[in-house]
Amino acid sequence: MNQSLRFHTVHGENIQLTRNMTIAKRVDSFCKGITFSDRNIAIREKIFIHLVTKAVQWTGFLRIGVTTVDPNTHRTNPNSLPRHACPDLTCRPGYWAKCVPENCFDTTTRITYFYVTEDGDLFLNTPTGEISLLTGIAVREPLWALFDVYGNTISIEIVEDPNRPASSVYDQLKQLYPQYAYDQQQRHFQEYQSIVQPSEFLPTHGPSITLFGNTNRSIAILENPQSTDGIVFLPEPLAVNSAYLFQILYVNNSTTRSTSTLQLGLTNVNTTRLQQSDLPRDIDQLINRSEYWILNDLIKVKPFERNDAYLFTLTSDGIVQISHNSSLLQDFIHIDKTLSLYPFLVLKQDVLAIRLIGKIKNIEKLRARQQELSSSNFSPVSLNRQLSNASTSETKSIRLPQDCVVCLDRLIDTVLIPCGHLCLCFQCATAMHDKGNKTCPICRTTSTLCNRIYLV
Image (cartoon, rainbow, N blue to C red):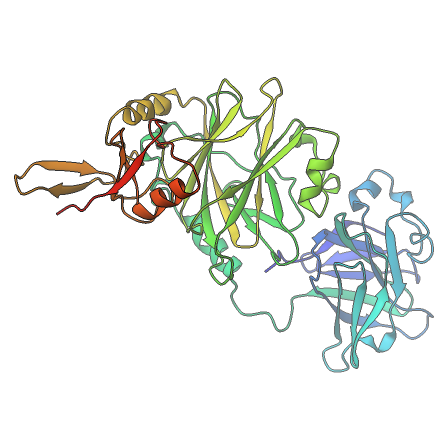
C-alpha cells in the first residue's frame, strides 16, 4: 500500500492542521483555505476524503484537484497562494481544480474519493457512481493532490481506504526487515562484510517509492507497481574499483512474467541536487534528456528471488561489472570513464523491495581472488558456496561447483572440449552452441564440442 497521505505544511493562512496533519480546518472567513498533499500521488491511487464539518451560511463548496507544481515553491513566498483555487490557481500552468457537488459524499460515512487515470482524467466518486470531474491533466509529471476548503466546507480529513486489508505486504516489510541485523540478512559476500560501509538512498526518488529503515533510508519499496516504475538514487558517484552492494527483499511471485527485470543506470547529473519535480513519471524518458543517462536491464533466465544479493563496480577501462550472490564479476555496460557518474536503480513490476547494504571503497582483493579462481580448471561460480564432492570407484575425489554459471539453477554436468572446463549444465551448453556462441565462459576458448558427464 502507499505511504499514508497527509496534508502539506504549506497551506492558506486560514487553514489549521490537526490530528497528525490529516485534518484541515478553515478557521476564519470563507476562503484562503488552499492546501496540498504532503507527497506525490500515484496514478489510480484513490484519495479518500471525510467531510468532518460543514456550514450553511456560505455559498460554494469544497474544491479538489491536482498540481504538478511542488507546494514547497510557495514556502518562500506565502503570498503566492491566492484566496481561491478556482480560478486564481487554475488559470496558472500546472493546476487543475473544480468544485465538487455537495451530494458527492456518502450520506452515512460522509466519505468520498477521487483518483487520476493514466489518460489524465480525474474521477470523483458519488453515491450514484464515479463521474469525470477533470480532464487534460499532465500525468507524465509528478502530481500533488490539491484541496480548497471553501465556502460551506469547514473541515475535511484524509482517511485510509475503508476497504483496505488489515495488513499489506508493505506493512509486513516495514515491521520485519528493519529489525534484522546485517549479518542475519546478508548471506552472500560474507568475506567483505567487515569492509562494507552502511549507506542509504537519497531522499529524492520516484513518486511510487517509499523509503524507510531503522536509522536511515536503506530500504526502498515500490508502491502501485501496476501503474509506474520506481527510481531510487545512490548517494555518491561510482568510482573506479569501488562497489555498491544491494539485496532484494521482496518479489511479487503472483506475476505471470517468466523472467524478472530490475534496472541499473548511471547519470552525470549530480543527483544530490535533484528535486522530485525533475523526474518524469515515465522513467524511460530519462534517456532522452540532454544530460548523460544510461540504463540497462538486469535480466535473469530465472526470476529474482528474495535475499538475492548484487554487487556492481567500475573498472579502470570504463566497464561496469556485476556479481550476483558472489558469482564471478561479469561485464554489464560500457560507460564514458571521463565522466563522474551517479548510479541509480529502477524497480519494476515484480521486484517490490530492495535494501542498500552499503558501499565498498576498494574491491581489488575480490578481483584478485576471482582471477585466481578463473585460472583453474574447476572454477567455482561462487566464492562462498559449498562445493559438492563426488567420489569415483577408485575413491579419487573431484570437487565441482553446484550450479551452472548461466542459469544458476541446474547442476553442472557438461565438459567443454578442448579446454576441459566444467561450468555449464547440458541444456545451457547445447543452447549456446545452437545459437553459435561457442566461447567458454571461463577461459574464452572456442569450444568444438560439449560432452555431458555423469558422476557417481
